Image (cartoon, rainbow, N blue to C red; front, top):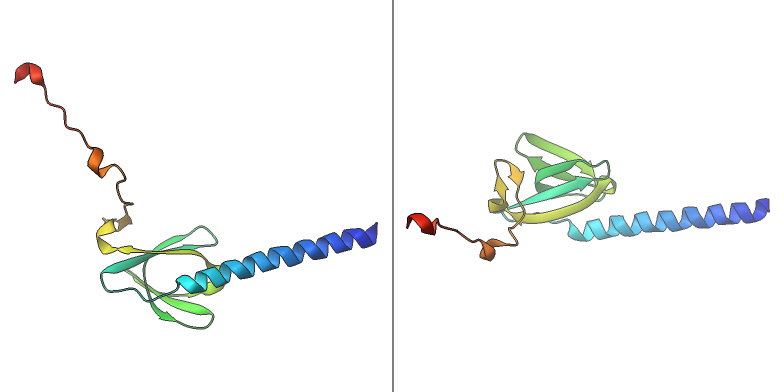
Length: 113
C-alpha cells in the first residue's frame, strides 16, 4: 500500500503543477500595454485588486502603474487581468456596464396630472 500512496501523491502533485502552469500561460497571453484611454484591473492570487495599467512587460514580471505610484509584480502572482475603458471608473472604482440600460422605466403620478 505505501507504494500506491506515493504514486497517487506524485500524480496529484503533477496534475496541480500542470494546472498552475496553464494558468500562468493564459495570463501571459493577456499581458499587453493598453491604450491611453484604457485601464486594467489586475487581480492577484492573494485576493488583491489593483486598478491602473501595465507600463512594462518583462520575462517574469510586469511594471504596473497606479494613481499613487508604480509597482513591480511577478507574473506568477497574477490571477486575472481585465482591460476596460477609463469611462468605466467612477471615483476611482470600477463600475461594470449596466445590463439593464434599455430597461429603465419612469413612472409618473397620473392622479396629479
